[in-house]
Each structure stands twice: as C-alpha cells, then as structure tokens.
Length: 403
Ligand code: HSE
Image (tube, rainbow, N blue to C red; front, side, top):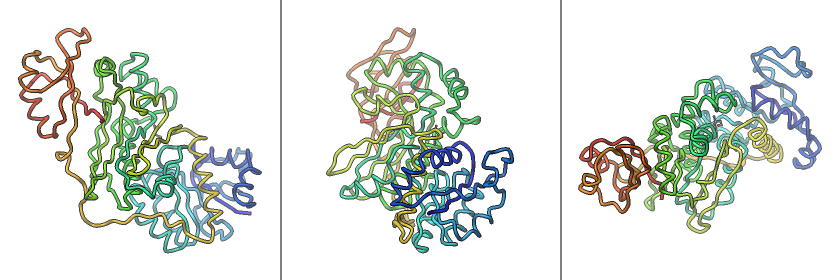
C-alpha cells in the first residue's frame, strides 16, 4: 500500500481524487500491486460537508510529519507556499508530483537537484500539455537524438480563441468572452493571452531537452491580444492559420533560440489542425525526424491523468530517484533575437508599388478589405524587418511565419 497526500483541492486536485477512487484496481495493477490510498488533502477552504471530510486538513505539518505518506501531489499552483512546501517534503524524504509549471520553470533546477540528493522523485509530467505525455518522451524516449527544434501549441485557452476566430469569424473580444464563459480562460486571462503560460511551458521543455536551465525571463514573449479577425482572414487566403507557438530551436553550437508568439503556419503542418482547447508539441530530432504529441492540454481529468501516472511512477520507483535534472550552467547560451531570420506576414495600407520598392515578394493577398493588402516577406532578421516596415509605413500587422 502507498499512502499519498494531495495539496490543493481545486480542479486538478479533485480530478486526482476522482481517478484514484474510480479505478483503484487498475491503478494498483499498474503500480505493481501497491494500492494507492489518499491519506490527507490539504486545502485552506472548508470541506466539512464533503463525504470524505475526515481527509481534509488546513495544516501542512499533518502531511509533512506523517511518515507513512511517501508521495505528495502538489497542485496548489503559484510559487508560494508551493515552493517552500515542496522543498520541505523532499528534504523529509517524500517524493513530490506536480502540475505547477510556474514552480517547475522557476525553481525546477533546485528542486530536481534536491530530489536527486535525497534519492526521491520530483515529477512534473502534468506541468506541460496537461494530459499529453511529453515530459517522459523527451526525457527518455528521444534521448538518442540531438533535439533540433520543439514547436508547440502549449496553451488551450488561446488555441480555443484563435480557433473561434478562424472557424466562426468571431472577434478576439467575443472569442475571449466565450472562452471565459466555458471556463477555459482564467478570470484574469493575462497569463494565457499574453503568452506567459506558454512561455513557462516551452522553458521547461527546452530545459529538459538540453539538460540546461532555460530561464523563461530570457524568452521573448508576445501574446495574441493584437491578432485581429482581418489577420486571420488574410492567413486563410494564404493557405495558413495563426497559432500561438512556443518555439525552441537548438543550434549546432548548442545555443538556443526561443520565442513565444503568434505565428502564421501552413495548413499542411500537423500543428495547423490542432483545434479547440487541444495542445500539440512537435519535437524534431536529428535521427527520428518530427514526432508530435497531441491531446487535451488542460482540464480536470486530462491533467489529473498525468498527475496520477506520475504518482504511480513515484510509487514504483520508491527506492531510487529517476534522476531527472538540468543544471544552471551560469552563462548565457541564448541566441539573440536578431540572429534568427523569419519570413513575416504583413498587412498594410501601403500601395503595391511601395511594397515592391521595399520587399522582394512573390505574391500579394487582397481579400477585398478596402484600402489594405497582405503579403509574406522573404526571411529577414528582426532589426531588418523593423527598418523595412518603417520604410513601408502604414503597417497594420506583422506576424512571424513558421517554416
Ligand atoms: N490556462 C492553461 C491553458 C491551463 O489554457 O492551457 C493549462 O496550463
């Protein structure tokens, strides 16, 4: 029998509890015969009316000091006190499983190292892509590759919004309201629509793939707040869609280019078909080529599915650390944004003659909106596109195109 505790009884925490109660025999079989038993649930709210009220506590020490608890699920979210609690639990010889991407992206280096030292596990499959298995594949199955690139749709809320704009012709504001009404977006949706959520997730994937700490503060992050319905229509005319992409490209000299921004992508890319709140991560390895991981990137049971699988893994590896770690190398290995060239999709009210003066372009897209046209540039560096768009004047939008 393996006693566990859950810290945080919100959407994911209650999903973890539901799965453990619904299919105990399957979990036991998958955990090599160990029954998974929830012994404590930590939450500051009142659950005295809950049918399992006896499990709830408001005191962290009830979990910390219970030597029979071997694995703790941290699904509280936020940095504090999740960081302090996780540290104390690992120090006391318990494994911790989390969906908390903010914590992993910020303190992962230290917490993973601590888990190693204590011969415990700190597992975080649910922190990226919700229910999609992507952490383990990168950490284990793709290790015979030099990872060349990771490009992912890592935020369900923004994908839902863009999808509603693309397929139903809604404006950004209407699509956002709809996402909030359906419970996808947070009450304060800034972390989703400004790209910060996706930024933490790509930082985790890039750290895992390179085994070096990638600080999300060094990743250029642009959200989807400026994407208009017209942008979406022009992209459609060019046989493309617009998606918020978390992007990490590993150069041969081991440096990293990383960005989170809306990108125009061809409909022939598998990422273009990822609709609704679904996420997808495409990893390109030098031997395997492209592999794609797809599924529900958010939500109660999909996320809890990844958390409970980590619990089972921690139970099965109770005697040894799985040795997942990355190190802070202490120097800057990020490629400056200006070294990377992209083609840009430009929407402008400039004349065709002026466009051809400034850019070397093959095609102009005219979708019948008065006084404006769109085109895709040749690949250019960021400083160059700034100079060129200044020379063009009248630029209504400028969006990177993913190769
Ligand atoms: N707000 C996030 C999303 C939840 O929409 O993808 C999962 O991290």
